[in-house]
Image (cartoon, rainbow, N blue to C red):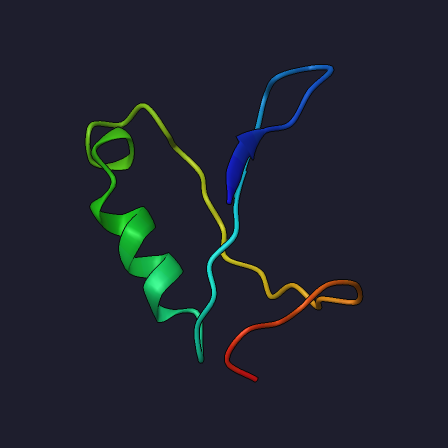
Length: 57
């Protein structure tokens, strides 16, 4: 899942599923916007699912 935060539209949230943060970190490091300096800051943070199905667990 991915989308921009609104009011103001100044950030984007992408949700990855995996055993650890490596898939999200690899995606960010290889993103053309990051590599070309259009995105100057990103961070990977864990997210705890409290509603809905968490596949693979």
